[in-house]
Length: 294
Picture 1 (cartoon, rainbow, N blue to C red):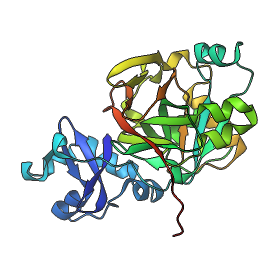
Picture 2 (picture 1 turned 120 degrees about the vertical axis):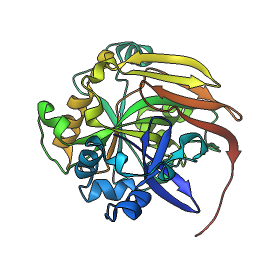
Picture 3 (picture 1 turned 135 degrees about the vertical axis):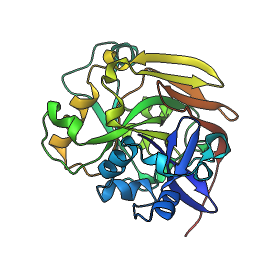
């Protein structure tokens, strides 16, 4: 099943996407008299994804009239949700990328970092270049979304706790990180430095993740690409690894590494393209200074 979050009259609503059409959970509730949550985060939190997916796979959309469906091209997408509990990233997870940055293959464990929720943006939102950096990069990555609370799970069990996958963009103040590797967390944490969506695909959509191709593009041109099978730490292993560090909860997001980064400047449009997903794109705007209390 493919889901997304759309902007509608000042609200953000979960929709099911099929072919070039979409239907909101709100509309499904109205027509069928059911009571599924209307936003994706609550669907995950309330453990409603399985029942919704079962309904969908049993032909549930056939119960709706054509008037309930809208054209995808007429929709404005937001991030899948605004307040994930945790956003984690894995660095240098492709051999080529690791050698490019460090000059040697990776160690036994991945480089990891966190993103604050203030970094969250969605499709077509603007990436704002901060005053503190003159070199910001963007990286396309496959995102894993946790569906069940879990701790200390094994790699072979990980598919049971993952809800699905999405496209993500991870931004980094490259010059800050270059000053000192200890500054990695700061370089990753600026506002607008994490984008995800527009599509979320449930885990049962994939028999084998290894054929998924991840591509970083800029201004419509593919710049870096690779396939999941060339990751050093595969998605299921990564989920297990993080669960050994901390309890994972529904809605937590893990970025799995990029095939390569691009330097972004004012006026650019950067993209994440992954097989089977709608492209995630964000425009870039120049530096700004904000000093406000709210």
